[in-house]
Length: 91
Image (cartoon, rainbow, N blue to C red):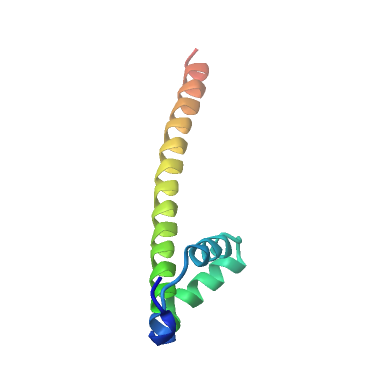
């Protein structure tokens, strides 16, 4: 293993357990999101900042995909619902 003592704190690599810990920390519902924003826009370790930014992008992507899927489900569900109402009213 290489000696990380010569590397400045700002550029020190994160261990696998460090990434795992940050992943769990960012997964906490409200507090994790606040810590995620602090890490993503803070001026700490570059590796933590980049990981937080990538996790933030992932959350935005999941949010957009969830909204699109919810809109499709609502649109198709409401179309079926209104079709049933129209078939009852027409009779």
